[in-house]
Image 1: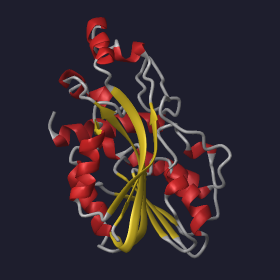
Image 2 (image 1 turned 90 degrees about the vertical axis):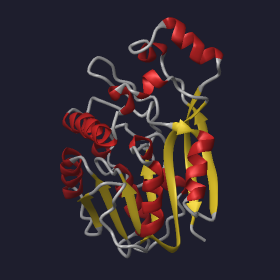
Image 3 (image 1 turned 180 degrees about the vertical axis):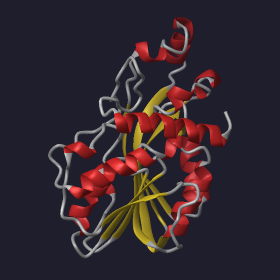
Image 4 (image 1 turned 90 degrees about the horizontal axis):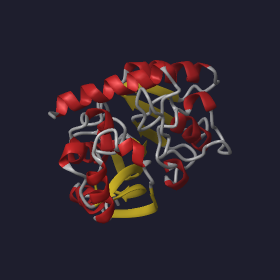
Length: 260
């Protein structure tokens, strides 16, 4: 599946999610699996309407955000992580969320209107070609989004470009150990559901290091148990058994990368 077609598929899928909040990451019209998301309910700044269950971690927990920082959230969705980051940066800082799904941006704006925040903004943009000047941000965060980007190396080069010289990122994402079958990588709905767009963990880390980040640290990793009946929508029982016997795993990781 070509890059632009993958992007169009992601836009279509997440537009549908924005319109129907009963969906979650890795959901289909028949099933709803929020198997990746972490619990935000006790975190300062949490706005329930902004939490669509689409994340796979808590990047703000490890992002080392400071008061007054300028923070960029990639694939900001309905604004969940932006609002949490805003409570940390305070009135002196700035939080910008970027997304290329217009329905998500509209949802985020509606959630923002319920607050008195003057320093949170949501803008349209593609992660592979961010609409910001270089050295613009102190911290970049993202939650279960980079796995959906076709060209991850280009995305991380963009992250590097927009961070200032003392900047860093904290990104929660989905990776695998072992290789998912090629058939799964071509299943569009599964791609938009966070699984088949994921890279092998070592390959993922290698891409980041090749982008010139000086230090790369895995802050958290947890195995994700995908229900068998989700896989069986796309593959046979024999193929599922093959995946299990080859110890192919799906993991949520939170990674920090530093330019200094």
